[in-house]
Image 1 (cartoon, rainbow, N blue to C red):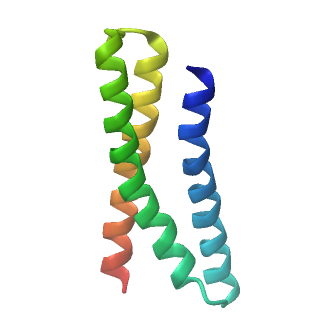
Image 2 (cartoon, helix red, strand yellow):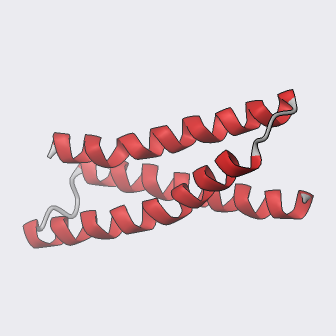
Length: 94
């Protein structure tokens, strides 16, 4: 289970690093739009999909109240909400 969770969480770290890199490019005057869009879209799409698959696996095992599951879903939901807020705010700034 730890290996599967690690494999599920690693892409979120990669997308967060890509997002931070796009902000660095924006500050330094580089072409930041592509990496920004890829990172925010990736976070907004990847997290619900992987959370759905993880919930399907856990529902068959009946592991509803384990602390690891709660921490995993909390991490994914918080990260998903933050990515959606960032996406909405970035659209307002143009």
